[in-house]
Length: 301
Image (cartoon, rainbow, N blue to C red; front, side):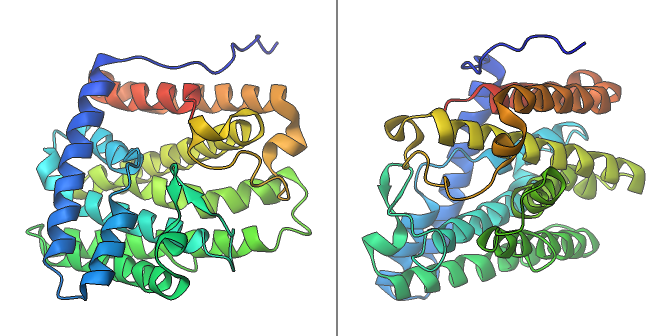
C-alpha cells in the first residue's frame, strides 16, 4: 500500500550547502575566465556572460561532483566537463526563451537574454556557448581517450538524439497526451544532460561499462524527478520564488496533468527509493548524491 507523502519542504544539509557553495564558486570563476578570453565583440561577450553567469543553481555540475565522489575524483579534474555542461545548459535556456520557442520574458528573476539584448544576439549567444563547451573539454588536460568519450556522449545527450529532440517534441505536443510519451519527452529534454553528468564520474574514473550504465540510469531518474517537481512548482509556486512566471507552461500537457498531484508525488517517492538502492553499494561515497536527491524533491524553486 502506498504510504502518505508529506508536502515538499526545504531540505537542509551542511554537506550540501558546503558543496553547493564550492561548486558554484569554481564554476562561476571558470566561466568568467573562459568567456573573457574569447576574441568576440564586447557585446557578444557581455551577452554570453549575462546568460552563463545569472545565478543558476549549478545543479548539473553538483551532480557531476557527486558522481566524481564515487571514484575519489577531485572536482578540479571534473571542472572542464562541468563547465561544458553549464555552457550547454545556458545555451539551451537562452534559445528556449526566444519568441519562436517558449517566448519567455524573464529567467531567474531577470529579463531573458533576448529581452535584455535582442533576438539576434541571443541566437548567437546560444551558438557561441554551445560550441565553446566542446572546446573546453577537447583542450583540457584530460587523457585524450577520456576527453573523446566525454565529447561524444555530451554531444549525443545535447543534440538531435537528446535535448534538441526533446525540445522539438515539446514544441509539438498536440498528440503527446499519454504518460509514456510525456516521460519519453522529458527523458530527452531534461534527462539526457543530467544522465551525462551522473555518468561523467564513471567515465573519468575509467569504471566498467555496467557501472557507467547504472549511473546513467540514476541520472535519468533524477531528471524525471526534477521535471516532475518543476511541473508541480509551475502549477502551485509563485513567480517571485520561482524567478519566472508560474503556470507559464499551462498550455503543455505534463505528467502532473495526466497523473494528478498524488500519483506524481508517489512516482517521485518510488524513483527516490530506486535511486537509493542503486547507490547503496557505494556506501558513504554516495552521501552527496543522496542529499542532492532530497533537495531535488523538496526544493521550492
